[in-house]
Length: 105
Image (tube, rainbow, N blue to C red):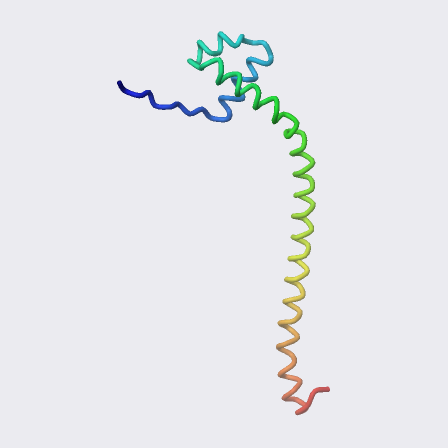
């Protein structure tokens, strides 16, 4: 007896199917027939969707915090690049000063 290969579904497909179910566009039975899904699988997708729904709104807050951290790190890198450039220029001047007077002033 040949085994059927497992189908895999994209997250976008799952979201679309669950959205059609939740909004009432189609019933669970219609969606299962249309897409050849088991009712248990559709129920699992719906349950997962509902459990993870609050995370959607947390993501905005998290992105804001991440964006602020990125901006802070970019400023730090900018300051360090400026300091490095100043140090390079200063190190180029030091040997010239040493040779000019024979000692540090």
